[in-house]
Image (cartoon, rainbow, N blue to C red; front, top):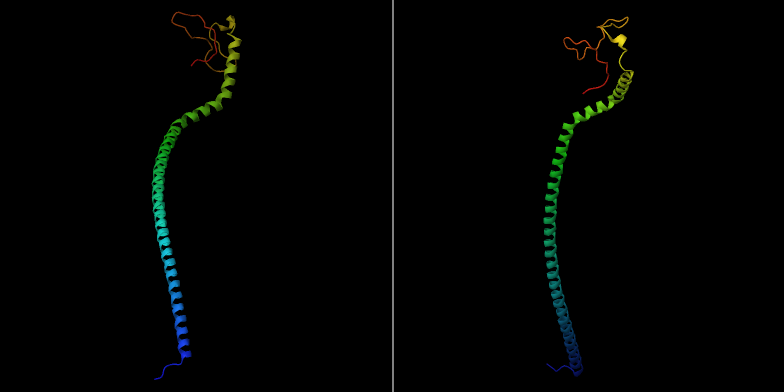
Length: 171
């Protein structure tokens, strides 16, 4: 076997040197990529840890808020029960007072005729008693049936005096 020509050896050496350079360049790039990946992995792990801590804090805050809302709900339900009891008590009171209110409304409706009656009675009192000549003895109303008109109030046995006719209201 003969030795390769020097040109071929130089070309082969140049090719080997280029391959070596290329391999060294690729190794540097690989190391840089590995460092980058490692740094990214560390950052991701740190970020993941931060996110987990934030998520845990959110879960705790959510649990606290749920407890607060449950307490508010219980308090509101107690208030509703208390208010409902007060409404029921007032409804019972209204039912008890309704007949009295109806009676007062009836009285209020009857007030104008009652006022008229009282005014008429006052007029009758102002007229005074009948004169003495007409008040002795029992008399009948002219043209009308009925008992004799006389004032027998205060008459006891043996008394024969007349009380004046007085109109008014007594309760």
